[in-house]
Image (tube, rainbow, N blue to C red; front, side):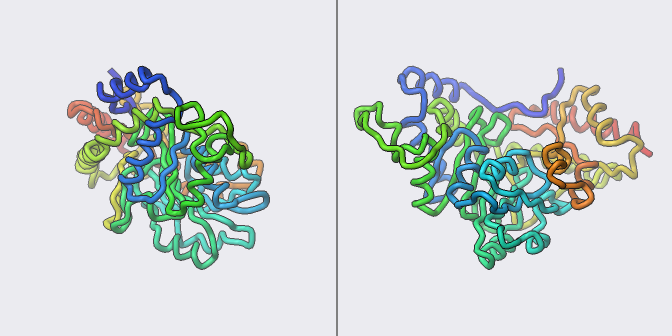
Length: 382
């Protein structure tokens, strides 16, 4: 049987929670979503949390709250998922790509100053694989230039940077509850912020721009009369997703510990092997271990990354790549972005593959992954 790249850790608790919501008769955004927001807010230590339908929706609304608009510029790492950049385009703004650190795959803070121009409005650090970016220099730069920091923390629940929980560092932080994430509700996202005015606006924007608590209009507490304050979106979370999220939140620490244990097993197996280039978490940070990136030493192997992944598949192990750099997509190539401007992204892209790492992995499955990786390294040793 093939070991999948990912499998969400779902128990009867999630099933029962969803059944309870269905029996309640309230399926869309309602009291369970509000309960989830409050629990999540308390978990990360933020003063405000706003639940939405996806992390993409979260990033889009965060840009609106930050007043990013037509002609503005937003700096994003060139190595990220497409959503990080496409939400900038939603706003009629311009994507400015920055290269990454080769050892962490994170936004290279040392290159940011050169990317800032008169139209720059925001910086979007992406916390790759679960490990936070080096936020101190990013925040210092933003404050000096009057920029807003919108953290793409889709991979990073829970994670810490210098004793600060991800969710309370930048101006707005966006989380993902997609099926593959460290808290898997199927779909969904969350925005945290310390700015109550932004939070109030986000709550309105997520449901067509209707006044706050619009969801109550069909309850005994609400009224059929409502006002539309501005153009909004259909970005609300459902109580079904929130019910799953609540149960996932209860086991979040255990799932994080389990991911860390799997990562440690991989580290021990691959450390010191000349076929691999280590990827390590920085000492001042903790990682949510959403991904386990394995970098190939191509000088020590007779095959490339694509053939290595094919070999894993032949041995019953699923793998993936994180990520295809943005400039390699047709859309961005047409805009003039080119690989030559992002050498570290290219270096990582040629070598990176992501191994299975999910809380429900059994010991024998972890051992099978390790065995397959080491067998390929031995078979195709240069």
